[in-house]
Length: 131
Image (tube, rainbow, N blue to C red; front, side, top):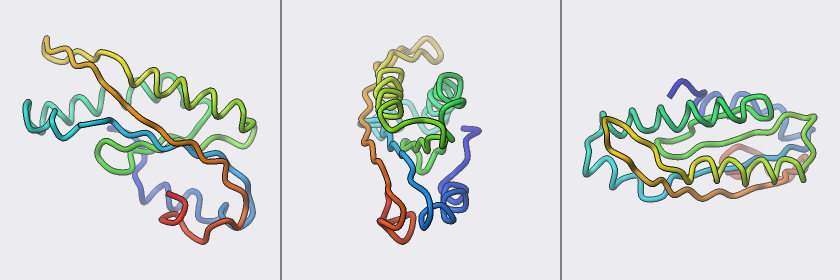
């Protein structure tokens, strides 16, 4: 997908968990397994790449973007983004993902869900607890 992965996310925020407040959004493509089952893994990988590219194009200035597991993405908002703005951007990201994507003349209506978290320093000890 060309995005940083879960290990990079862990490395990037591990030092911030103790001292910083941050806004984090988790995004999940609903029923992605069906896409792989019907069209195959190569198609699914191409599809994920297309979604990743769209997210990077739209939101890389406001957040660090990660593909943390197959169809799951994470946005860690930059320090200059207020929590209310991060919430609005998260809603926009879900809208971008809830779109029709066309690959090899096959149009797929994507459905995505997200969860927004306004993290305060020292609320959890590690990435797993945060996610």
